[in-house]
Amino acid sequence: MVPNELEIMLLRFFHIVPALVFTLLCTTLQSQNLVQNGGFEDYLHCPDKMSNLNKDAKYWSAPSLGTTDYFNECSKTKLGIPMNFKGKQEAFEGSAYAGLYLFAPDDYREYIQVSLKETLEKGHRYRLMLYISLAEKSDGAVRDFGSVFSEKPLSIHTKRQLSHASLSSQSVQTTHMKQFPENGFHDNKEKWMQLSLDIVAKGFENYLILGNFMSNAATRYMDFKDASPRTEGYSYYYIDDISLTYLGPEYKPNEVYVLDHVNFNFDKFDLQPKAKQSLQDVYDYLKKNPNLKVAISGHTDDLGSDEYNDVLSKERAGSVARYLIKLGLEKNRITSKGYGDKVPLDSAQTDQARRKNRRVEFVMTEFEDDNE
Image (cartoon, rainbow, N blue to C red; front, side, top):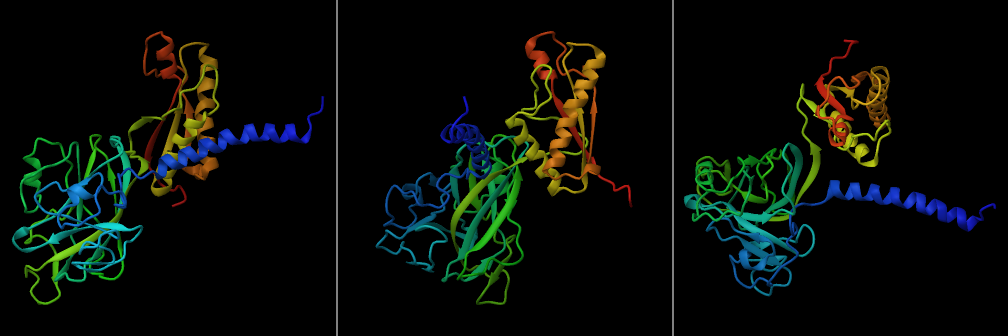
């Protein structure tokens, strides 16, 4: 029986849609913002009191006694948008943002903290991005703005800067402070300035804290009214559209890695969809690090003859190498080799151990062009 056009269309639909859904899912996972309410749009109360971020903005709080502010278009008070008690500024996106002092007399500081949607994966890379704007009524601008991640929410009874010493004295596990890269002072009072930095997770991060973690003496401050760089004026900033997105694993040169989800079915060397996503991570890393090359090794379980396993392991390594080349990796930056069942991860003669041994590993090393 010859299928009609409708049947052909249905067959194509059921073939294409699952693949499309999987692609969209992977894209979503890669670009998902892990910061809860990063644009401050979700609120519990329309702000009518200053210093009330803890009670107004959903998911956000102040980790110290510094009194961070919440602004929203809905407010009929001095906490509105665009006009508020610190000047005039439209939201970067949406209808809300937060405001905090990054510099003030006597080392007074304000911070914001938020819970993440999931615990960060150890050894994996993430990109933190946000937008800030210097409030019109600020006396000066700073260059120092940083982030800290913690296992649990912080509650530190100080109005001063959250120094390394004060963070270390807490029972809560925290990362070291990391500064946003800058090309100058954050001194624009009209336009929003984008700040971005990449981190490698420790594996315990559940909360993000933002602010200036330096003392006044250590902060690079430019006073608009005084020639002295140490004059203690005020630097107040609006902050909006905070995001934390997943970039992929962090690979160290000369270390052996087992490719995630590249555990082959018995007697097979074809790549499954999840394996292709793992290889995309490897390719993306190599693309960003042109000084590295990669060596692929294929492995089998202990079933079958040595000769057959040598061929099968070579095919497994080759399938990975070919896929990386298909993604765009230069052929002279990749080698592949099969080891049969000679290097097992688990020597137990069980189905679980054999599945673990049916794998592909890789090592990245410094790349030297043979033509040089």
